[in-house]
Image 1: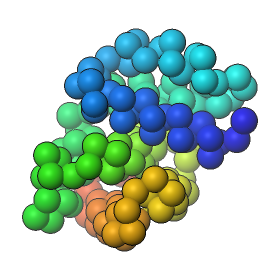
Image 2: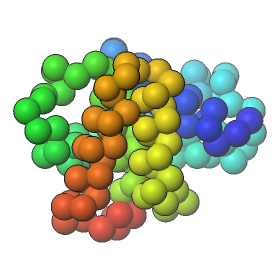
Image 3: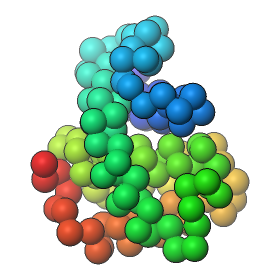
Image 4: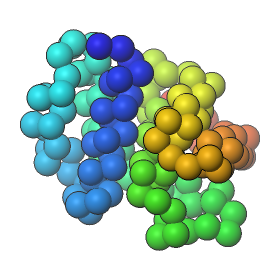
Amino acid sequence: MSRKLAREIAMNVLYQMAIHEDFASKSFENYINENMTESDDLRYVHSVVNAFADNRETIDIAIGKYLKGWTFDRLAKLDVSILRLATTEIFFIEEVSTAVAINEAVNLAKRFSDDETPGFVNGVLGEMVRHEEVTPHER
């Protein structure tokens, strides 16, 4: 399995969390374990899901600052999940560079969302990285 596919699975878990309004990482343990085979990718997905579950409020506040006229309620849950995944990677997953997190989020938006979403995702994440007080990967 590749990191690209592992990232898609992490996005799917964050999407399921949003759909079910259940943000406990343990609730999705079986789904992750059933869909992952390689230990490095399994470790990555667990680290993303756990980091998000542990820091959801901080992550959502950071995203919310840069939505510019949008609210979480107005965004598609998939688009929110892509933003949450990238923000989690940027601020909490040391092995993923900021540039890679943004680029992969844009690619996920191109693949799974509408034509306007990649630019929106890039804009929100770019503004966040430029203006957020917390240094990426600082805990």
